[in-house]
Picture (cartoon, one colour):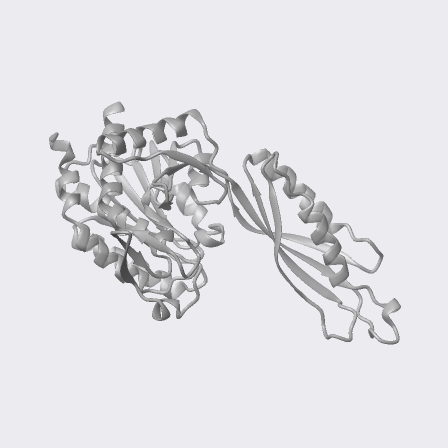
Length: 388
């Protein structure tokens, strides 16, 4: 094997160590709102890099520090960026209820636990890629990894960190879980989250309902209008996922709040739908009612550009040459890869170990894919350098 590929040989022996680090991370609660838990994940990763002689630095954000690690030649421009998020969707206590376990299903070993696939396995894989290039001393170009802390809520703070660390990058590999098929992701929808409020007028629901203006009734009208924006072509989904409001059962509701999820495939479609959602939020059917809309955060889409698809092809060719069957697909879910893709940096997503059932108690990662996926990405990085 070419001397530059010594990292692949190093990776081949790291299975138990990868699994041990994965267990440590899964057993730490780290929901997006759990700053202490996310910080514990960051500290464990920082300790791993220190053990392997890898340089790290903190990347401050208003929500807490992200972690960046790098190896390879000096210089900021022309690096490869490996991305992953440390937060999960699970509340504090979930790791205690469902700690990391290993089971065998259909002859394959699976890791289970909260966030095991989305995306703590990807965090581990990225860490070992950087450590592997460091140990082998063969990184042909700078290889950096960034660990952010709020992807699951749309990266309101993480986006700036990603944009800063990605500046000058020649390629991005985002370690969201590989699809069950083994595919990586070549395109993703974008998404935006909103909070809508309606203020009405309270009145006694018994003798004086005519004196009131129901915020709940108005929000119901708006909900039907928002859901009516969903269309298959262009691929748009608008969903009201949370509603709360009212004062008491016998009072005409003076207040109501809803949270809205918008998904879209093209940036211009997202911009148009945001205007339409806002217009519905602010227009009320009767006097005495008022509505507002607040943008909470969101994701940019990964558009299938020529440069993105070229990087996907390079990755798939590397995987095939290692005996792996890997394709590429479009997915309707969102990820931070949309941020780097929107900057014009070639980006491929879902390069992490294969997993499924994210955000549920049935979530798992296929432990048999840890080393092959890491080797495929390492080989893709080596070949990327050859093309420079």
